[in-house]
Length: 182
Image 1 (cartoon, helix red, strand yellow):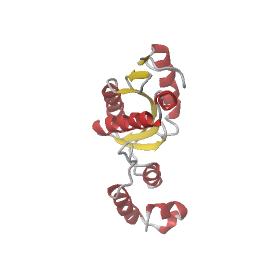
Image 2 (cartoon, helix red, strand yellow):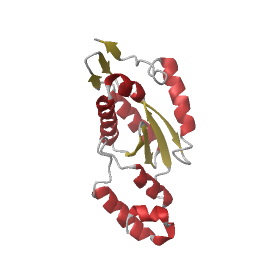
Image 3 (cartoon, helix red, strand yellow):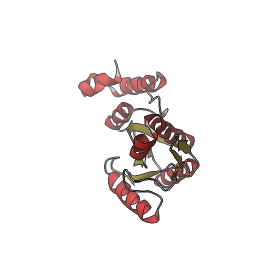
Image 4 (cartoon, one colour):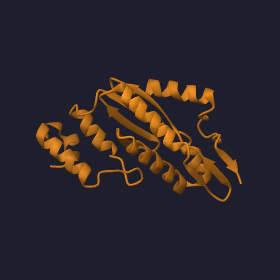
C-alpha cells in the first residue's frame, strides 16, 4: 500500500503499515529534488498519525519572489536548495511544503529555535546573481507553535514584522538589502 492511499482512505492502513510505508516513502526518493528535504505528503502523513514532535515551526523564505522575478527561476531554485541544505545541516526534521514554505518539528522548543537560528546564520553568506544583479545573504522568517505548523503562522507573521523593522528582511517583492545592481 502507498502513503497516498492513506489520504484517500485513512482506515485502509494500520499504524505499523503506515510507519513502514512512510519509511519506504522517504527512503525511495520522496524528497524534494531542489531542497533534499521530505515533501508535503510526508508531513501530512506524519501529522495524521501523530508522529510529529511537540513543537512545529512554519518557515518562510525571504525574497524568493524577488529572486525569481529579477534573477530568474534557476536562481530561485538555488535559493530553495540552499535553504534546504541549511535546514538539513542543523539536524532538525524539516520538510519542504511548497514554494517558499517549509515546516519543521522537534520535541524541544529551545532546541528547535536554536537550530533555526543556526540555519539563518549559515544562509547569511549565500550568494546569487545574474548579468544585472548580485545578491548576498539569504534568510527566512519563522514561527513556532505547540499546536500545529498552521498555528505557528502567528509567530511567523510577528517574526516577519520584527525582521522588517530591524532591516533584516524587506516587504514582499522589494529589493533585498543584500542585492546590488552590477
